[in-house]
Length: 201
Image (cartoon, helix red, strand yellow):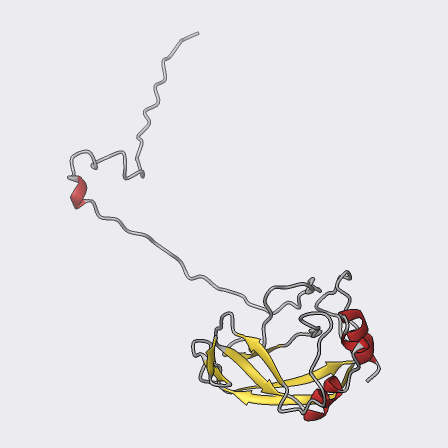
């Protein structure tokens, strides 16, 4: 047989710009470019499962209209309690007013948009040692107060001649205040008695 040598010649081309030419080009003259193609973003809303919502340090309150996702409304349940035991309003107290005060801790959205808040008194108890989720609802008595306002999270508020930190103040129904003033000494002795008293109103 005849032996033949066969040689293959390979011609290589290099597409890596870092291999050819860059070593002779000054570094400050190198052109940098990026390429992108059309990107399509698909968006949709997904309802979130229940989230734990008890014992939070902050709560959202108000409404926000997003141009894409529409209207979102946030509210919360809370249970007011005595700030100390053995509360006394003195002999023959007369109601001046009853106000729900909610301090601002931050804000977002259009602060020029008017907000309306409705306040109801809970008919159900909230227990501190229980766990609650965002899907939980509570029964409530009829409306106790309403307030329409423009949020002012940066402005102090004058209360009785004294400037206090920014807060939302909503006047409540006088009948609710008079019920509190009508509580006995025993019913104002501690929060257990106070909450029992309120549950019966």
